[in-house]
Image (cartoon, rainbow, N blue to C red; front, top):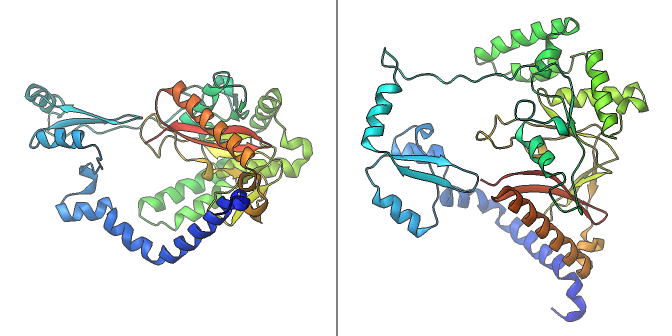
Amino acid sequence: MSKSKADHWALVAKSILDRTRLALASKAEQYQRVLQPSAEYLGSLLGVDQGAVCFATCFDPNILADLQAHEGKLLRMKPTSADIVYNKVKDSELSDASSTDLREDGSSPSITLVREQYGGRYAISSEEFTIETVGAKSRNISYLKGKVPSWVGIPTSVAPPFGVFEKVLSEDSNQAVADKLSSLKNKLGRVEFSALGEIRKTVLQLAAPPQLVQELKNKMQSARMPWPGDEGEQRWEQAWTAIKKMLRRCGFIPPTSMSVGLPEQTHCLFIRRSIIFRSDSNGEDLEGYAGAGLYDSIPMDEEDKVVLDYSSDPLIIDGNFRNSILSSIARAGNAIEELYGSPQDIEGVVKDGKIFVVQTRPQM
């Protein structure tokens, strides 16, 4: 490529990659089945339940050789944020475990999940986030404040703590909703999955207790976040609807604007200056890891579908801007990984040349 066209190299490369991707699209699923078979498929070949076997990929020949040397032995494995730690289980440990892990009738003890209880508050600020009140996603972002370089932006947030959904559901004004949800839950127990859609619609009928509205308003205003009710009752209803869609746990991020788009996409979703409500559950991942990501977020306002024009994007045509932004992203990622001491799955936004980190969690 000639020097005069150097500024457009990325645009040309993207065009070539797009066409290659489309040409191979019909074969992609077939290749994936061959190169990366599912756990269900592997389990069927081995004649075992996939829930009872750990399927893992190892690219380190030294680790693979060590595992092969333990063939026929019982190993204890524990996933961490950076690796899978394993060690041999001693015969004495195995005999002790066999005697202590069984009940008198010979059955194994069951696992009990503890439901988080309402702690007496409908809303808390980021300074009040703890393991007992919010999920890992909110805590991770709050932890970054004051610890990362000043040029890395951290969004302000508040959250309804664990137990708020159950508290709202127990209010007298929501008795009819609670009764209907209980009935629909029984349908699910009978494997009537059509009840799922009815549950989603029913939850949207919940009324907000006055105390919830007041506490949420106070916390948001104290954090210098815009209160939707200041723009009218309709704006608050929009916010309350988004909160209900998040069901049990949600956090709030007030961006100047938000544009979500990846280099291989031709369209993105764009919203006005608004508030984003996002789930904060640990239930979808391993204990201690954040749950649903940014794409499970619900904005208070409707999104507009916008056609992306990379031909005028500074990231494509301005070499100095590109080097500056990419260098800043790399430095921000390095600072966060050094802070946590392990590889991180980081998501963020670049707005007017400034980097904002909206999520970080251990990379698995």
